[in-house]
Length: 233
Image (cartoon, rainbow, N blue to C red; front, side, top):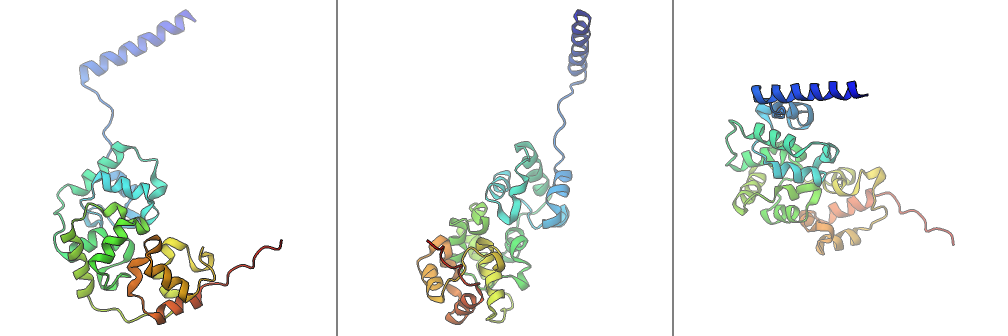
């Protein structure tokens, strides 16, 4: 036992000498490699990432809020997240125009600007969704009022989308992010009146859906599966 302890101390002593003479420190996380492994499948290659210039705080907030399903990478250490943020900002010009801001901050979840699922959203609606952390949008609190307005202007300037009146499509675009897919919705049996009331009262941050007209809300209600029968007492 004594010999084993002496051998271990000798090894540790050698390691200390190597560290002191070579200046060795723990490896710095490779941000580009981490991005490629954890982020690229959803946000594109680093050079063309839809999340350019995201800060470590924004990335962490998106993970904490499970934005776009990012909650699964909670195992990343703070140093890893900072390395990814550094990689995203290195040599990347900050977005300044509405289309650039949309591409950087919104397209990952809502599609390209030309085919965005959030066409014609106003600045007030976008800000309300950020404040209410709708779909994990709380990670965008760093956007200024001017930037939010530029995004809204880009959304209204893009080619208008045809008015959708298909219930399942309307549900998928406006409701599934918070209430699950239509087949497993946690809002079965909701009537058009109940949905309208929730939007008017901004229940759960739903006020941003005030752009939906009565026909569209009725279509969503008709698409919802029936509510389960009450339990037999």
